[in-house]
Length: 233
Length: 356
Image 1: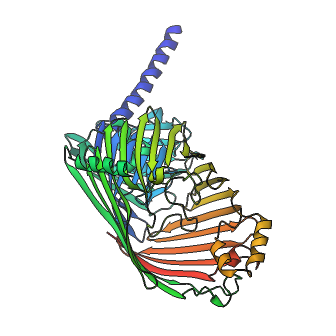
Image 2: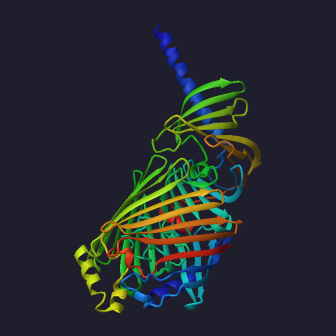
Image 3: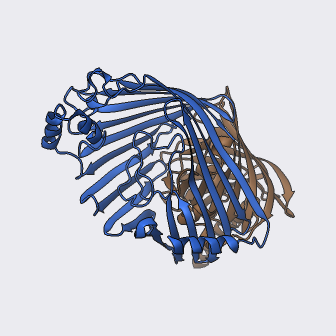
């Protein structure tokens, strides 16, 4: 009996490790380098109008990123800092970064967090896993109550570990957004996600696409990822 | 001042980018017509004695230029602003112009003219001892009108704490300590004998709360602001703030001021300044984007007499570079109230802005 319990515990532990390992391998398609810069073209459709924006995301590690606004012209000179789930925005007319909440939008259906966050491993724990056809379905639970989306259901290709889609739930259990990881390409010698589509499930018909290009390795000092350093980018 | 210029000269002379540099250039230019009928029922402006023009046409342009090395060790920044008006002629000024050097991973030095905006408040920032005073009726600085202060600044990054030391024009010195404690931004501010503290924190995914308290030694005043910002799931953003300053007028002082208006109208006009004639004010801002159209309503009320200013802005992005704006400002309140004394009946602005 004892052996059976030990065996079951061991099996559960293995399963837990598997989920974490799958998550880590899946995240590698979104955040393949430790210190990097990548361009993001964001297009938002609200059913009637289309908006385009361009950003450059400078990242370090799994939980630090700075988003540089490149276009449209009215947005040039702005920077967004994300340290885990804390965010500040820097406007060119003011030297003081302003604290903002994750739900404040960058543009269209994309919130600040959507663009700045490059992986799930830091903020979420894989609490469950099941198979669904040729996919793994991972239930990710936010590690911290301050994380905007309390639960994420991530679908991962069982053969390649590429992320296929992610459902984002808020604390009430309501499903707000679904991200589809549509295209992959080789950048800087690594296969990475290059096209993501985000559906707004609260307001059907609204969607945002993000195209990633020009991934390069860049050595950013730690001190550049602080609120006070935003004016120095 | 001479020492500061020497330091700036040395820094500029030693500007030799070790690797590729990036040049950024951006800004905007705008033209607008302002319709400003006089408030002849204000005791301060009977029969428009102030001679306020009914219409004014303004044009302005702000250009930002930045040169920085890819390793972010050096950065040069210039902000130039020009303005022309059919009432006041033309002007051109250097809003910002500084060089920034990251001497070591933990030390950076900035010299020149810098727009510093301390504090966490949206409409009021009592701890802003360095840099321009914020205009609560235009917290976004719509026309990029802020001008920086001439300073030399050293930023020291120690662990997760930033210590900024300033020497300013006129021999003034200032300091600020910032640290993210838990998830809360906390900063201590000082300039000469003035002291202040500010804090901000985000709760959950949509609520931000902030506050600051400052003791201004020059004005012998204590000022404080508390507020918050909430973003609803339909993208409506709401900012609320309450401000209190002991350098504003009490009810008795306001009544005395009103009694003195007829004694010296010119002096009374010089003394009257909206948002400084009381001690406690409330601020609310509602904003929401509807595709390329954005709407914003700002209301500021004197909590002593209930009078208020309401500013509504509708802007429409016609093109990625071109935005049209219509701004209407109304003042309400009883005849004895603060905002009913404004010399203008209303302000209506129609304009366009081109970004480059």
